[in-house]
Image (cartoon, rainbow, N blue to C red; front, side, top):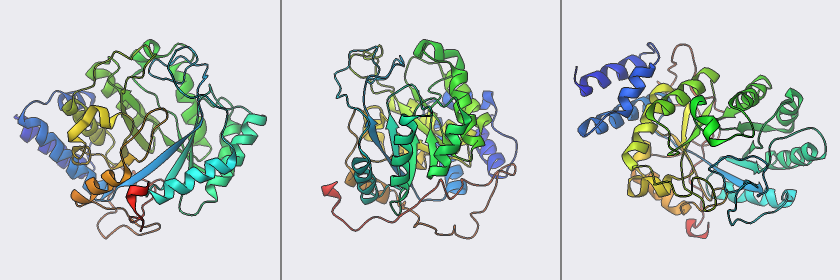
Length: 367
């Protein structure tokens, strides 16, 4: 069967709520070449529209504590094991974090993720300080409090975050189980999985994805997608390696743009009802093909700067989304009739995770 006929059959099955995409099917998507690549994008776009509509979710992050992290993740410029020339500072004051939340709201983001470079979060003064900042961000109208604070080993910590108003917690698996030990040696894959399970059990939405372009094989990308499906994460951030000076991966070549986009499409098929978000490295790896990330199946992206690297101007992202005839859903808006489809009993992304706003009335050049 030709690729075009095959992907049409897979698409019809997914849209009808049929059997989940298999590992072999996902691998065939990544192996597409030539014109078949664009048939794959078109099919993924249909799946995105069916389960996510034509609106886009934006989120932003603040690097709330920078550098001197004890972990040795090979891609990370904030590790104390490496010599990356970055600014280092302790946890930002609550007022400064709130200022970032207000700025995120102004640029059209529906959430601010509080990110800290350390091994993880434990009870004590550190947790108390974090909870204060989560409560403060949660009090900013129109912006959800999200966070990425490393490993959580105590289930009570996850409950405390939930009680403080945390909506979503990001903790990426980064790569496949097979590859993880080559990327990080100071904690395990199972440590990361346990963290996600603690948060899910506490009622916090989970955000987990990976970084591609770290020397993995196509099978590793598929295995990561399948592991995340097993964990039933709510949001899937897809990052593409932007090599940082001083890290073991600083000499890595950029991932080819079409290879990035095929990965986006594969994740959309493996996770048809979920939020698939393009995050770090999209500017470096996709280059002029950035608008195709939505055509290939993404339904969200990160706006503003990343942790130790800069992002695109918000005005450019807005223009790109408008040019694709896409938009944001206003807060609390109902989905249009016919957008209530489910897949194998799984509802579309929870509206608490999918937070839409219209374009703010302000000069985007000022952001």
